[in-house]
Length: 167
Ligand SMILES: NC(=O)c1ccc[n+]([C@@H]2O[C@H](COP(=O)([O-])OP(=O)(O)OC[C@H]3O[C@@H](n4cnc5c(N)ncnc54)[C@H](OP(=O)(O)O)[C@@H]3O)[C@@H](O)[C@H]2O)c1
Image (cartoon, rainbow, N blue to C red; front, side, top):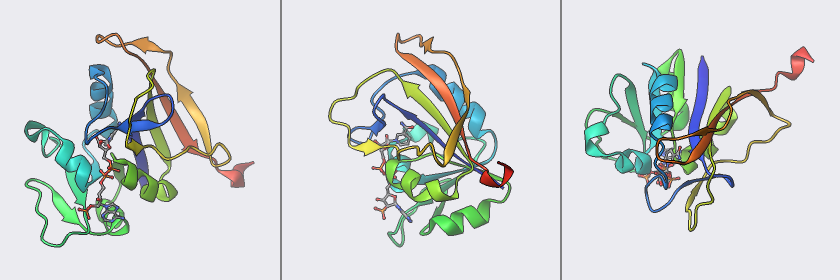
């Protein structure tokens, strides 16, 4: 099973502000669609609620929403109270798609981090990616910096968990 964490962050690791993503980079949305494929996507309740209703559930993928609130319903998604139970449920491949709380909880289970760097410094951010410890993660791929149709510079990074048994 492969568990990937997929996020976009500014230069300091900010991923959100007031329940939304503080930039517009359509190319990253296309990348997100591609890397999440037709597998399961696991997200926190706040991220689910941040999705525009027309994109809820994310099409073509098994949507799993985590909340500790009993009785919560999310139309078109499965609702679970436990990250480990969600990971057990999904089988072959899962993408953890945020937000900050869920990335932090899922990091220990992940094999791969797919990070989009956005060349911005977001003011008053209130959600953050977990720090990527380079004793644990190695950069496996990095695209060149590219300019979005909106003018914002961005690049794609891939980290893989270091397999110390092979060294
Ligand atoms: N830039 C990006 O790539 C990206 C991606 C996704 C989201 N975001 C942004 O991130 C922000 C949201 O992130 P966030 O950290 O505030 O919230 P979040 O991680 O999306 O959701 C947090 C909620 O998930 C539930 N939860 C957390 N840990 C849990 C666990 N171990 N088991 C079961 N349920 C658990 C709780 O729901 P209850 O309170 O209902 O119990 C908690 O309040 C938004 O601004 C969003 O736009 C950015």
